Image (cartoon, rainbow, N blue to C red; front, side, top):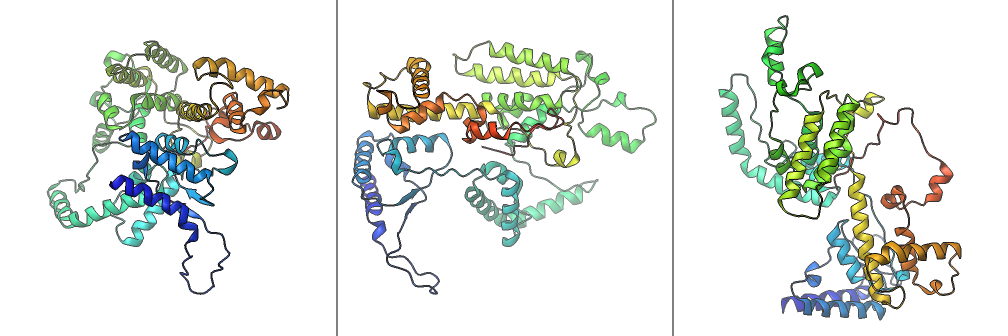
Length: 449
């Protein structure tokens, strides 16, 4: 009964919201009655389209489609996040709506540095700048500033309640510490970039016997306590090199991400930290060998493969070096580069979902039933015939325009078009933009998606 009342209220809101009078908030300018009104749905009720109750779910979708086809909704804006779950809902609820009636506006995710600045400003304004870690919140919100502000409020609220006890505890620990160190609370889960950095930097504890006799006592103490990238003479042979100061499997578990995603991040960012190309070849050989195990088996094999491949980053790199750049400004703003394989998998899933929804509408009489052969053989032939006939094929020109666009998108092999949606002609007219050092000046991509 509650779900039914929610669906009725939501449909009534969509059908009658353009009849509501606008609110005169400022009171300075009169509101024109003939001004068009827009229905804004900031948070779509996903419970109405969940699969828990298929009967009520289909009933809501049928009434929603009738509402749109009957032109009861004049102007409406629906807000969704850029993830697979929301994209599946968008494909489902709008699959029977004509493409010319829908306009999609995509907003790029906010970079982590800008989100951190905004959250730091909010924390300073509210007087909680020293109680929250805005950098960790900016990394976890994934460019969604509203989610970051909500997390900031929750963290600051809990910090205020514990502030007095925390200050007393820090004061007691700092007073009893001989070095005057301040107590620092570290979360159990690591940021993805921190987990990747532990593997690619390959820092180890310098053994006490490796210190020269001329080194001062203070320098010897600081160097022995700080993990650092060791020179090749201390990394070879492998049987005598210093051990790791962390357990790779624990870092993988603390990263809070899928094993395959972690391997993609390591594969993309590890080459910057290798000082010898032969060591990089050994790492690639191990990586390919583990991939040959096959991905048809699920379960613990994924975690085992990720563990072996992550350890291969540490085992093969006998000459670890910090990432080098053409100037110091790029090095100071360095962030890990997001894997392009992740983008490819995401766009593949979204394209197949959109194609399945379109084929369900037009039926199997147009191009046949949905099958792997349709994507691998039929659609490329359709794209070729439409391209050669300039869209004037006797029968194929009757296909829906949305299907033509999907066929053209599926037949495009440019990775830039897949990620950004830019036309190939724009890139061809501008020409490639080459830099002096193509290897050391990889593009900075501060994205936590």
